[in-house]
Amino acid sequence: MPVCAIHDIKGKKVEEFDLPESIFGGRINEGVLHQAVLMYQANQRQGTASTKERADVSGGGKKPHRQKGTGRARAGSSRSPLWKGGGVTFGPHPRDFSYSLPKKIKISALKASLNACYLSNDIFCIDALMVDSAKTRDFAKLLKTLKLQGTILAVIDKTDTSTQRASHNIPVLNMVRASDVTAYDILKNKKLLITKDAFKSLLKRLKT
Image (cartoon, rainbow, N blue to C red; front, side, top):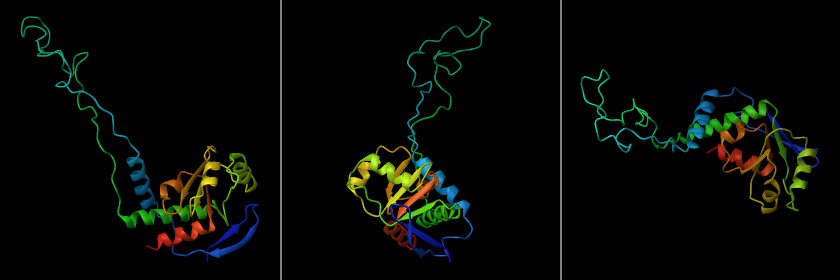
């Protein structure tokens, strides 16, 4: 049965608990991960790109030259897409790229991302993540003590003002609550730093 070791703030193993075999240790469902990543990336798009068609460009009311006899191609307006300063053909317009997936697919993707993180040995569970001084320097020392390198996603169960304030100026660290974490959050970070209570809350969320 898969197990997860729990460490203290000094990096020493203090206990371990069993993980459900239905989530950890099996095959990674890459299909739902792909769907989830595409959805999260699409939802982040602003969709504000905009161009003007020939009807939106000012000017062009007068025929540039007579129809025949000039040896040039026929032209009815200088605002044609063929002319400099004219409109744009099939250009982008503001649109909403966001969409949603069924809840079961989101849960399956979250399970698959956790399993991928577990199989690559990138989950580090800690009994508690507290920085009472609210200083970034102390939080950085904590990460150095735990020997965590690369981008880190810290998952907590409850919001702690001092700990959050201490983590704001660490560029490689992202902090999120267990109730809000997504598969995309886990996949885009190298390491997953999660508290014991947050891990239990996350596993309870995956049962729904």
